[in-house]
Each structure stands twice: as structure tokens, then as C-alpha cells.
Image 1 (tube, rainbow, N blue to C red):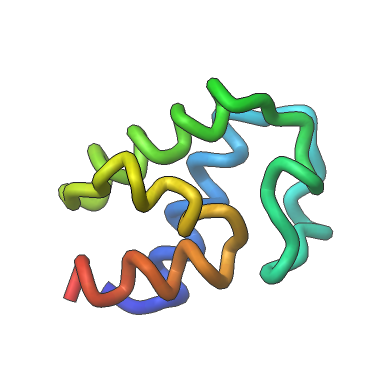
Image 2 (image 1 turned 45 degrees about the vertical axis):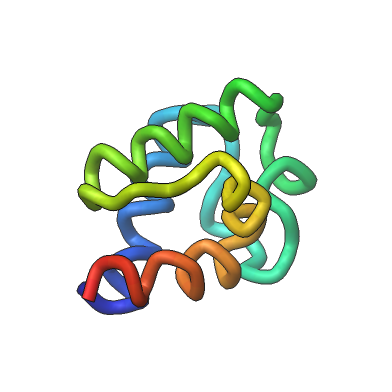
Length: 81
């Protein structure tokens, strides 16, 4: 899986969890919570969906590493290779 494929999966998940937000303006280096109308439960839903779709384990202490698009792709890329 490539970084672009991970990014596409994240965008798909975000569109399901936060359907009213415009993801076309999503900045890769800004926190999802700052850009989207998401609360902590929405962020948890994103993490759980990533675990399910990508079939990876993400320890709870690593959840903060999934804060932006860039950090999420950087974190997940070695796990899905």
C-alpha cells in the first residue's frame, strides 16, 4: 500500500464520519480536529476504522500520532508494507 492509497482511505473514512465537512480543502499538516467538526469520539472512530480497513494494530498510546494527514500516512506506511 502506498502513501496515496493510505491518504485515500483516510479521506474516505473522514467523509463517512464527518459528511458535512468539505474535505477538498483539507490541509495535510493541520490537525483533523482543527479542520473538521470532529470531537474525541469521532477521532476514535477514525482510528478504529483505520485498524479495521488496513488490518493493522494501533496501540492507544499512538493515537496522537494520527492527528494530521501527514502524520497518519507517515505512521501507517511502515505498518501496511
